Length: 127
Image 1 (spheres, helix red, strand yellow):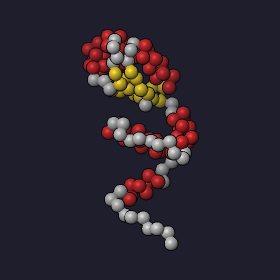
Image 2: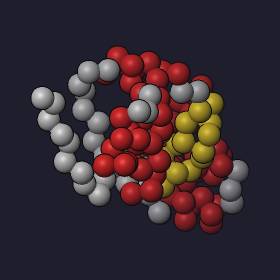
Image 3: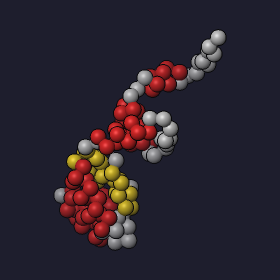
Image 4: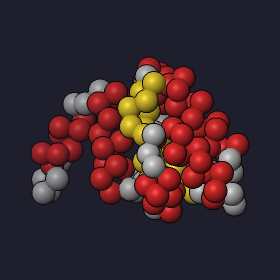
């Protein structure tokens, strides 16, 4: 006889998650991380290839400045350039790291901005 699953207060949520595609799960994890920070850890179990394919399909990225680095002035200059903010607003953005400095940027542009920021000494993640 099949074993009956124990009902918990999360049973409905788990049932919905079980029905999601890999891409939908990836989007859910991204939203949870955006809301609560990087507390959700993905494991490299079955379907890992599908998750990698879903990540490769992504065409727009959010650029997160995780740390300003040792050359804060150079980082501020690059942030000012790529965000078109004034000097004071760019400094506030850099001082508030980790923070998103640009959202929904095309892959090529995001990689270019990341490279500029890293050359200025900053730490950057593309999400």
